[in-house]
Length: 333
Image (tube, rainbow, N blue to C red; front, side, top):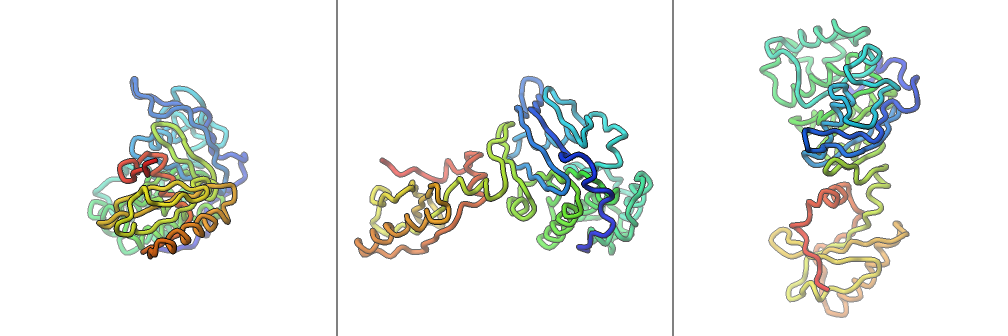
């Protein structure tokens, strides 16, 4: 898969500062409110990752921005235009990779690309598209014979060939092998560098960490956390962990400055873990580590597999979704 981004996109960044704007968006299915008053902007040349568990409202949000749904309340704008009904003003500027592909299974890969090129005003060359998505050797293969990951790469190529100024990517790398996924990340990053505004939904947290300028995590229709990756993770503290020594109970663990302790079951044993908070992200973990080592020396203990790390996006995600509730038991007292 090529990593070049020549000819991509056209006139990027020439529109208003916010390519995509969402204000107090609400969407419902009968009595169920799937999206509950969310707001965010995406600028040209920015990738905004919208994360969340299944059913959090991500796909509903993307479908609304794509113009397939009218907001129950609130507003959405793409380059200042209401996208509902996919107005002509947006068709040449916006494209998407949705979860459900709309291609014809009987056509070959080359025929599928040519069909999409016929519908675009100024499409990329077919061979260039196939090179970008790593399917040049599959040009004569029927779409129905492609793997799931190859079909996703084809979907991306069909979106890219129209030179979009805004691109919606809903789980774009599902089913791809690691090599294809990383090559796709490079292609997406090249699009962003060229000025395309990208809204990405993904369950691959590493994908968001690698690509996103800003991140929002949705849960039950609401945005619970948002900001740059650093802003999102720094408030979740640092982590100190080690295998709990034999004959040491959770209640024996020392109190550390600015830290809360928990015990977790991992790899067939008990692990102690501290979350260290404080106003000084650069030094807070080290200040907590010193009294921990003093406690261990005083008891003649070796802290096996001792680790010190910053919070990760996974830590934040699990905290927002309450996914760790069944894995971690708070220390009594």
